[in-house]
Image (tube, rainbow, N blue to C red; front, side):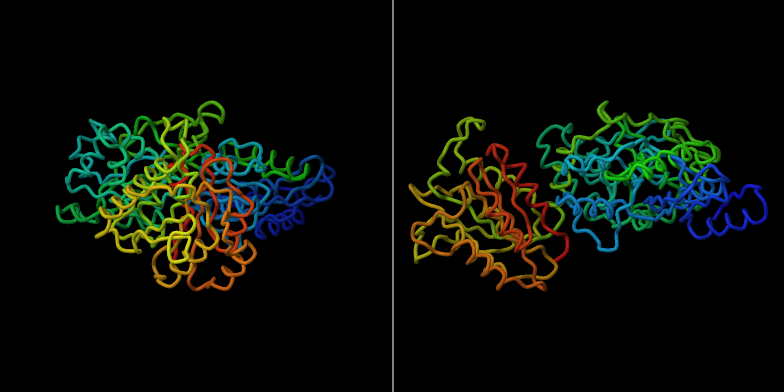
Length: 575
């Protein structure tokens, strides 16, 4: 650890050394004479690649007598994976971020969060209106690039010609032998940026954009890794053709990842391909958490000024990171063929904030395509499903629901197992539900399921026996529960809740039944997708709170496709 102790006398220097080595927990009056009184501890969370240098800068600032509003300041810096803190903040605000999963009980919320990407802040703001951090300016920058082994890049015309993502996508899908990989995009900002760029390239490819994107995602899923270190280990380790063919050919990584990889002098260096338009960069925003008290907020502002100093920016260069303006500081080595300066990220409100709806759709699609599952889809066929949807050209609620299911089914891989029920009231045998197709592998039932879903019709004057149906569906999925898959019930309904003139389970009885059935060793998620503005959200929320899962309401039934995708993404990725 690097320290800087001022020449303020032997005693003061010794005290300063203790403070620095101890993690800068406290500032002391001895270090600044009469300049400050009292003490405040500022907690900072930073990503692992930046935490040591933030800590070193904070230690030096404290050792020089850090103060704010006349109060002595100490700083504690922790290494925190951004996705872990995003999960903790989402849990605190009672929301869920697509693909992020639950929060770890060991993750604490700091006063200042330096994440690796503003995309985490934008997603949290969109999901939780109460999440209102301040500041948000970058302390470092790393563009997201395509990393390609140099021999392969040269075969694509680099460095004289820069390969484009659309052309690469076509080669990857066309059997050229190029093998693509990605760091899990639901948990990694560079992977997320690469996924968004890929989705944009698929939309521009012509033809069936969804089919192109789905095929690309399935190929990426085969080469995905949990962390960047595991992904880079898949790049070829020798220049012979066999190694180049069997190794990873292309992946979206941060520029810093490429610099760090090449610094180890590997047998096959990586070329960094800078795309146009550029993917969202890692911009390391400095965010002061909402509710931070005034003394800590003032201390946070002063610490940010210390991180804008030239000494800190020079340390960034040694890490392979650029300063916030896109320039490299002292010690920064630009990758071969790369720009000396890249564009600084636009400020929020000036094109800098990503469209969070686009982000959620891309991540939901990724989850639907890549997470194997066992699902029972249960369609409401009560009489109200005959109602027209004005925003869908007059198509009925049943028709838009079936179209959303058709598109969703096309995303699911052959490793999925799917069954279909319908429900209303009195559908035979004293039941409110009827099996259309048992849960079975899509590898052999996909075409049959598509035909059976297309043939579903609402029941004239049928009511909504939702509670009895849900209990039976949950029990059916549980009876055939399979490890290694996400086991779930997906209900699609436009009802206001349970509307069964013949009685059946009440809501309290249903909740008791689900509590009896629930087995932590065999988790089942219930996802309820409501259509229209008449859905009884409160009752449905009680159900999914008991089972796990969630309720999504498409107030405009024409938007059910987006809600369907988002519902699929609520499934946990374990099983």
